[in-house]
Image (tube, rainbow, N blue to C red; front, side):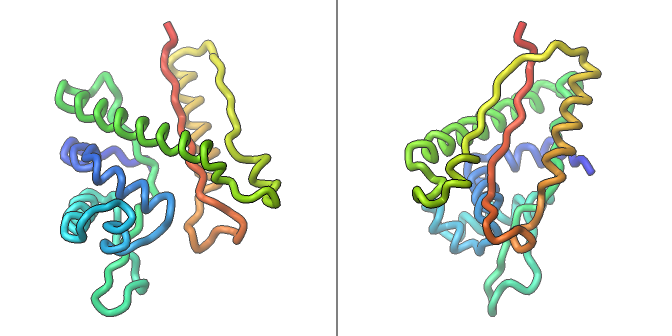
Amino acid sequence: MPFTPSLSGLKALAHPRRLQIMEQLAHHGPATSARLARALGLNTGATSYHLRALAGHGFVEETAGTGHGRERWWRAVSQDLRLPPRSRQDAETRAVVDEMNRLAYASDLRLFEERQRTDAVGDAEDADWQDAAFPYSRGTIRVTPAELRDFFEEYIALVNRYKRAHEDAPPDSRTVLTRFLAFPAS
């Protein structure tokens, strides 16, 4: 089910540290505030504050039964996050959406370049991952606005077919970042 956050939700998500927390949870699975703080070079107080802000807008949630004692574990909520259509964005919403996109794309590009440099697919004996990693396709299509919307929905349906929780994934699976980008070239 598509989820379109409110302007306050978009503002909460557009914060650089919160995007980092979301990425860490999405890429590595559930974590405590302390683990996130160590991974991101933050203090636990700031991490806890950002987690509560994200939880207040439904982006993260506590995982039941994972913590020991006072330990609280958090996970990213798996959802089909949608942005408001540009024709319905006021100036403030547009600025927040554009900043969030800028931060997210820059982060994705940094991670992509880092993984290529470090050959993050594993050692030479992991041939399946070496052959499967870093696929590339770039092209153009000539479509109407309605066809582009349909194309996007088909892409989302394909991604959703492969979504599963960390605990439900096969042992040889890895978290793979996908990104859809489509815009008029002229």
